Length: 271
Image 1: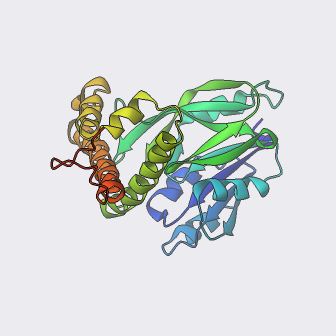
Image 2 (image 1 turned 120 degrees about the horizontal axis):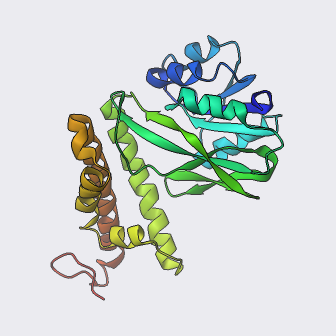
């Protein structure tokens, strides 16, 4: 089946990550690196691999960029990866044993989150469909993330992907501000339209519980407590994002209700 797969990797200043990802994709006949005009060594790294086709395109959204990437692919199967997704040897072997005639339209894969290259025992990162039939799938924007929509049955791969981002902390901090705004837009729009809110959505809209809940869930339930400093670092990252999101939601409440006086002196929205 490997001969029927094209890998798609989105990049923007992914010099610290890209080489490790591409080194695990040398088996693919073609890897499309779709770049948003990186300013670092991303292009140089990509072009050093003979099976890579390097394309540059201005970035509008993750879903739009991914869908453009799918249009550049001719094979039936697509392996869609972030630039910090590193395939394990076990997963590579498993993909090689799949048949192109599989009844599945998409395969989900589990992840092991890494901090400074150290795999953690657990994380809040959910399984994602990464291997799928191109003609039956497209991407939609979902808050700060993008989601694959596909038609047909799915299956799970046994092997895992290492989510191993080595970019500087300052870059991560900057991106979280944008993600928090996008996630706030999604939550408030879903509530305004009366859409279904998950339990985690409701906790986030309560504002204060989300950050400590994320920290404790990562440390205790996901066992990051036993991963030492990398585990603590990850749990603090998760709590930090929830704090940013809570601040964004609270700021929106003030902006929307300050004129009408619907915010009490404590800053809590009146029912």
